[in-house]
Length: 248
Length: 74
Image 1 (cartoon, rainbow over the protein chains, first blue to last red):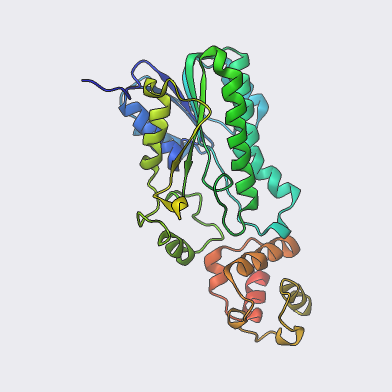
Image 2 (image 1 turned 90 degrees about the horizontal axis):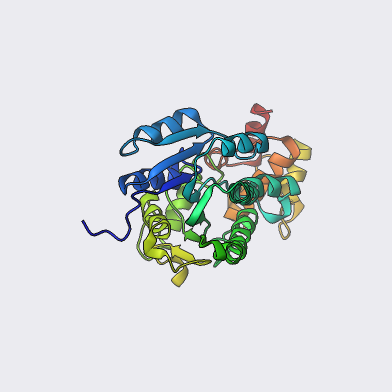
Protein backbone atom coordinates (compact mmCIF):
# COMPACT_ATOMS: atom_id res chain seq x y z
CA UNK A 1 0.00 0.00 0.00
CA UNK A 2 1.25 3.50 -0.87
CA UNK A 3 2.22 5.33 2.31
CA UNK A 4 4.79 8.16 2.24
CA UNK A 5 4.69 8.31 6.06
CA UNK A 6 5.78 4.73 6.63
CA UNK A 7 8.46 4.05 9.23
CA UNK A 8 9.25 0.53 7.95
CA UNK A 9 12.92 -0.32 8.39
CA UNK A 10 13.55 2.54 10.83
CA UNK A 11 14.62 2.23 14.45
CA UNK A 12 13.25 5.07 16.56
CA UNK A 13 14.31 6.02 20.10
CA UNK A 14 11.52 7.61 22.15
CA UNK A 15 12.22 9.21 25.55
CA UNK A 16 9.49 9.96 28.06
CA UNK A 17 7.69 6.94 26.67
CA UNK A 18 6.00 5.91 29.91
CA UNK A 19 3.21 8.46 29.51
CA UNK A 20 1.53 11.18 27.48
CA UNK A 21 2.92 12.27 24.14
CA UNK A 22 5.93 9.92 24.35
CA UNK A 23 3.70 6.92 24.96
CA UNK A 24 1.32 7.75 22.10
CA UNK A 25 4.26 8.45 19.77
CA UNK A 26 5.95 5.12 20.57
CA UNK A 27 2.71 3.22 19.92
CA UNK A 28 1.93 5.04 16.67
CA UNK A 29 5.53 4.59 15.42
CA UNK A 30 5.25 0.85 16.00
CA UNK A 31 1.95 0.79 14.08
CA UNK A 32 3.73 2.41 11.12
CA UNK A 33 6.36 -0.30 11.09
CA UNK A 34 9.19 1.16 13.16
CA UNK A 35 11.30 -0.81 15.57
CA UNK A 36 10.95 1.25 18.72
CA UNK A 37 13.34 1.71 21.64
CA UNK A 38 11.47 3.24 24.56
CA UNK A 39 13.01 4.97 27.54
CA UNK A 40 11.27 6.13 30.70
CA UNK A 41 11.81 6.40 34.43
CA UNK A 42 8.87 4.35 35.66
CA UNK A 43 9.21 0.57 35.12
CA UNK A 44 5.52 -0.22 35.51
CA UNK A 45 4.26 2.48 33.15
CA UNK A 46 7.05 1.77 30.65
CA UNK A 47 5.99 -1.90 30.63
CA UNK A 48 2.43 -0.74 29.94
CA UNK A 49 3.60 1.22 26.88
CA UNK A 50 5.80 -1.70 25.78
CA UNK A 51 2.87 -4.11 25.90
CA UNK A 52 0.84 -1.84 23.63
CA UNK A 53 3.52 -1.67 20.91
CA UNK A 54 2.56 -3.27 17.62
CA UNK A 55 4.82 -6.07 16.35
CA UNK A 56 8.03 -7.37 17.87
CA UNK A 57 11.73 -6.49 18.10
CA UNK A 58 11.13 -3.47 20.30
CA UNK A 59 13.30 -2.63 23.29
CA UNK A 60 12.69 -0.88 26.58
CA UNK A 61 15.09 0.73 29.04
CA UNK A 62 14.21 2.09 32.46
CA UNK A 63 16.51 5.07 32.66
CA UNK A 64 16.68 8.52 34.22
CA UNK A 65 18.28 10.65 31.51
CA UNK A 66 19.74 12.95 34.18
CA UNK A 67 22.17 10.18 35.24
CA UNK A 68 25.06 10.71 32.85
CA UNK A 69 26.86 7.44 33.72
CA UNK A 70 23.74 5.38 33.03
CA UNK A 71 23.15 7.29 29.79
CA UNK A 72 26.69 6.46 28.62
CA UNK A 73 26.16 2.76 29.38
CA UNK A 74 22.80 2.87 27.62
CA UNK A 75 24.33 4.41 24.50
CA UNK A 76 27.20 1.92 24.40
CA UNK A 77 24.68 -0.94 24.33
CA UNK A 78 22.44 0.70 21.74
CA UNK A 79 22.18 -0.35 18.09
CA UNK A 80 22.24 2.29 15.37
CA UNK A 81 19.06 4.34 15.12
CA UNK A 82 17.26 6.39 12.48
CA UNK A 83 15.32 8.76 14.66
CA UNK A 84 14.99 10.24 18.14
CA UNK A 85 11.86 11.66 19.74
CA UNK A 86 12.64 13.76 22.82
CA UNK A 87 9.40 13.79 24.74
CA UNK A 88 10.59 13.57 28.35
CA UNK A 89 9.36 16.82 29.85
CA UNK A 90 8.56 18.59 33.10
CA UNK A 91 6.60 21.69 34.02
CA UNK A 92 6.56 23.86 37.13
CA UNK A 93 4.03 26.62 37.65
CA UNK A 94 5.78 29.13 39.85
CA UNK A 95 5.28 32.92 39.68
CA UNK A 96 8.55 34.48 38.57
CA UNK A 97 9.36 36.16 41.89
CA UNK A 98 9.57 32.68 43.44
CA UNK A 99 11.33 31.03 40.51
CA UNK A 100 14.72 30.19 42.03
CA UNK A 101 17.80 29.02 40.17
CA UNK A 102 17.12 25.55 41.63
CA UNK A 103 13.62 25.56 40.10
CA UNK A 104 15.05 26.59 36.74
CA UNK A 105 17.78 23.94 36.97
CA UNK A 106 15.29 21.18 37.71
CA UNK A 107 13.17 21.97 34.65
CA UNK A 108 16.08 22.81 32.32
CA UNK A 109 17.82 19.53 33.23
CA UNK A 110 14.86 17.53 31.95
CA UNK A 111 13.55 19.74 29.13
CA UNK A 112 16.81 21.05 27.71
CA UNK A 113 20.14 19.68 28.97
CA UNK A 114 19.26 15.96 29.03
CA UNK A 115 17.94 15.80 25.44
CA UNK A 116 20.78 18.03 24.19
CA UNK A 117 23.41 15.85 25.84
CA UNK A 118 21.77 12.58 24.78
CA UNK A 119 21.75 13.76 21.17
CA UNK A 120 25.36 14.93 21.35
CA UNK A 121 26.55 11.60 22.76
CA UNK A 122 24.56 9.61 20.20
CA UNK A 123 26.12 11.61 17.40
CA UNK A 124 29.64 11.38 18.83
CA UNK A 125 29.35 7.61 19.21
CA UNK A 126 28.08 7.41 15.61
CA UNK A 127 24.84 5.72 16.58
CA UNK A 128 22.78 7.98 14.33
CA UNK A 129 22.43 6.69 10.80
CA UNK A 130 22.69 9.10 7.88
CA UNK A 131 19.31 10.63 7.02
CA UNK A 132 18.23 10.33 10.66
CA UNK A 133 15.49 12.59 11.97
CA UNK A 134 15.53 14.14 15.44
CA UNK A 135 12.28 15.53 16.85
CA UNK A 136 11.97 17.60 20.01
CA UNK A 137 8.62 18.05 21.72
CA UNK A 138 8.73 21.77 22.39
CA UNK A 139 5.67 23.93 23.07
CA UNK A 140 3.81 27.01 21.90
CA UNK A 141 4.71 28.32 25.37
CA UNK A 142 8.01 30.17 25.25
CA UNK A 143 7.94 30.35 21.45
CA UNK A 144 4.68 32.08 20.54
CA UNK A 145 3.09 32.81 23.92
CA UNK A 146 3.29 32.03 27.61
CA UNK A 147 0.90 31.66 30.52
CA UNK A 148 0.78 32.93 34.11
CA UNK A 149 3.49 31.39 36.31
CA UNK A 150 5.10 29.69 33.32
CA UNK A 151 8.37 31.60 33.00
CA UNK A 152 10.48 28.54 33.83
CA UNK A 153 8.73 26.19 31.42
CA UNK A 154 8.55 28.83 28.68
CA UNK A 155 12.27 29.59 28.95
CA UNK A 156 13.17 25.91 28.67
CA UNK A 157 11.02 25.46 25.56
CA UNK A 158 12.29 28.69 24.03
CA UNK A 159 15.80 27.32 24.54
CA UNK A 160 14.80 24.08 22.79
CA UNK A 161 13.60 26.07 19.79
CA UNK A 162 16.97 27.78 19.54
CA UNK A 163 18.74 24.45 19.94
CA UNK A 164 16.95 22.75 17.04
CA UNK A 165 17.95 25.54 14.68
CA UNK A 166 21.64 25.38 15.63
CA UNK A 167 21.67 21.59 15.58
CA UNK A 168 19.89 21.51 12.22
CA UNK A 169 22.72 23.52 10.64
CA UNK A 170 25.48 21.52 12.32
CA UNK A 171 23.96 18.16 11.31
CA UNK A 172 22.85 19.13 7.79
CA UNK A 173 26.05 17.88 6.13
CA UNK A 174 25.29 14.41 7.49
CA UNK A 175 21.75 14.55 6.16
CA UNK A 176 20.44 14.46 9.73
CA UNK A 177 17.37 16.64 10.22
CA UNK A 178 16.32 18.33 13.47
CA UNK A 179 12.82 19.72 14.02
CA UNK A 180 10.32 20.31 16.76
CA UNK A 181 6.63 19.89 17.30
CA UNK A 182 5.11 22.69 19.37
CA UNK A 183 1.85 21.65 20.98
CA UNK A 184 -0.72 23.68 22.85
CA UNK A 185 -2.16 22.10 25.98
CA UNK A 186 -2.39 18.33 25.59
CA UNK A 187 -4.29 16.12 27.99
CA UNK A 188 -1.44 14.31 29.74
CA UNK A 189 -0.41 13.69 33.32
CA UNK A 190 1.96 16.69 33.19
CA UNK A 191 -0.89 18.73 34.72
CA UNK A 192 -2.32 16.06 37.01
CA UNK A 193 -1.55 16.56 40.70
CA UNK A 194 -0.20 20.00 39.81
CA UNK A 195 -0.97 23.44 41.09
CA UNK A 196 -3.41 24.16 38.25
CA UNK A 197 -6.97 23.26 39.21
CA UNK A 198 -9.46 21.36 37.05
CA UNK A 199 -11.57 24.51 37.00
CA UNK A 200 -8.74 26.60 35.55
CA UNK A 201 -8.08 23.93 32.92
CA UNK A 202 -11.76 23.97 31.90
CA UNK A 203 -11.63 27.76 31.52
CA UNK A 204 -8.45 27.48 29.45
CA UNK A 205 -10.04 24.88 27.18
CA UNK A 206 -12.69 27.39 26.08
CA UNK A 207 -9.94 29.58 24.61
CA UNK A 208 -9.13 26.95 21.99
CA UNK A 209 -10.93 27.62 18.69
CA UNK A 210 -11.28 23.87 18.12
CA UNK A 211 -12.87 23.66 21.60
CA UNK A 212 -10.75 20.99 23.15
CA UNK A 213 -7.24 20.30 24.36
CA UNK A 214 -4.98 18.14 22.24
CA UNK A 215 -4.86 14.38 22.50
CA UNK A 216 -1.41 12.76 22.64
CA UNK A 217 -2.10 11.17 19.24
CA UNK A 218 -2.67 14.62 17.66
CA UNK A 219 0.97 15.34 18.45
CA UNK A 220 2.22 11.85 17.61
CA UNK A 221 0.99 12.17 14.00
CA UNK A 222 3.03 15.36 13.53
CA UNK A 223 6.08 13.62 15.00
CA UNK A 224 5.58 10.75 12.56
CA UNK A 225 5.56 13.14 9.62
CA UNK A 226 8.89 14.59 10.79
CA UNK A 227 10.39 11.11 11.35
CA UNK A 228 9.28 9.80 7.96
CA UNK A 229 10.98 10.32 4.61
CA UNK A 230 7.99 12.46 3.62
CA UNK A 231 9.71 15.34 5.44
CA UNK A 232 13.21 14.71 4.01
CA UNK A 233 13.57 18.39 2.92
CA UNK A 234 12.37 19.77 6.26
CA UNK A 235 14.91 20.79 8.90
CA UNK A 236 15.20 23.38 11.67
CA UNK A 237 11.48 24.02 11.65
CA UNK A 238 8.65 23.84 14.16
CA UNK A 239 5.17 22.47 13.59
CA UNK A 240 2.51 24.27 15.61
CA UNK A 241 -0.21 21.84 16.72
CA UNK A 242 -2.50 23.85 18.95
CA UNK A 243 -6.13 23.67 17.87
CA UNK A 244 -5.85 27.26 16.66
CA UNK A 245 -4.95 28.69 20.07
CA UNK A 246 -2.19 31.05 18.87
CA UNK A 247 -4.30 32.46 16.03
CA UNK A 248 -6.05 34.78 18.43
CA UNK B 1 -0.14 32.22 62.79
CA UNK B 2 0.94 35.85 62.91
CA UNK B 3 4.01 35.12 60.83
CA UNK B 4 1.84 33.22 58.35
CA UNK B 5 -0.53 36.18 57.99
CA UNK B 6 2.49 38.43 57.48
CA UNK B 7 3.87 36.16 54.74
CA UNK B 8 0.43 35.95 53.16
CA UNK B 9 -0.03 39.74 53.18
CA UNK B 10 3.45 40.27 51.70
CA UNK B 11 2.22 38.93 48.35
CA UNK B 12 -0.26 41.79 48.04
CA UNK B 13 0.55 45.34 46.97
CA UNK B 14 -2.68 47.31 47.24
CA UNK B 15 -4.61 45.60 50.03
CA UNK B 16 -4.29 47.23 53.46
CA UNK B 17 -2.54 45.19 56.12
CA UNK B 18 -5.52 45.61 58.47
CA UNK B 19 -7.60 43.48 56.12
CA UNK B 20 -5.54 40.38 56.81
CA UNK B 21 -6.46 38.20 59.77
CA UNK B 22 -7.36 34.61 60.57
CA UNK B 23 -10.94 35.13 59.40
CA UNK B 24 -10.11 36.89 56.11
CA UNK B 25 -11.88 35.26 53.19
CA UNK B 26 -8.99 35.85 50.84
CA UNK B 27 -10.87 34.95 47.68
CA UNK B 28 -13.11 37.96 48.25
CA UNK B 29 -10.22 40.43 48.24
CA UNK B 30 -10.11 42.71 45.19
CA UNK B 31 -6.50 41.86 44.59
CA UNK B 32 -7.13 38.08 44.55
CA UNK B 33 -6.46 36.32 41.23
CA UNK B 34 -5.34 32.96 39.93
CA UNK B 35 -1.74 34.16 39.72
CA UNK B 36 -2.06 35.31 43.35
CA UNK B 37 -3.14 31.78 44.26
CA UNK B 38 0.04 30.45 42.64
CA UNK B 39 2.11 33.07 44.48
CA UNK B 40 0.61 32.00 47.82
CA UNK B 41 1.40 28.36 47.00
CA UNK B 42 4.96 29.28 46.02
CA UNK B 43 5.34 31.30 49.26
CA UNK B 44 4.12 28.29 51.29
CA UNK B 45 6.62 26.05 49.48
CA UNK B 46 9.47 28.52 50.05
CA UNK B 47 8.73 29.37 53.69
CA UNK B 48 7.30 26.09 54.99
CA UNK B 49 8.50 23.53 52.44
CA UNK B 50 4.94 22.34 51.96
CA UNK B 51 3.79 21.66 48.41
CA UNK B 52 0.06 22.20 48.11
CA UNK B 53 -1.96 21.00 45.16
CA UNK B 54 -4.30 23.42 43.39
CA UNK B 55 -7.37 21.53 44.51
CA UNK B 56 -6.24 21.47 48.15
CA UNK B 57 -5.75 25.22 48.06
CA UNK B 58 -9.25 25.64 46.67
CA UNK B 59 -10.80 23.95 49.69
CA UNK B 60 -9.52 26.68 52.03
CA UNK B 61 -11.57 29.83 52.28
CA UNK B 62 -9.96 31.78 55.11
CA UNK B 63 -6.34 32.48 55.95
CA UNK B 64 -6.88 30.50 59.17
CA UNK B 65 -8.06 27.44 57.24
CA UNK B 66 -5.09 27.66 54.92
CA UNK B 67 -2.76 27.96 57.92
CA UNK B 68 -4.30 24.80 59.40
CA UNK B 69 -3.88 22.98 56.11
CA UNK B 70 -0.20 23.92 55.94
CA UNK B 71 0.27 22.98 59.61
CA UNK B 72 -1.24 19.57 59.01
CA UNK B 73 1.45 18.92 56.42
CA UNK B 74 4.49 20.17 58.32
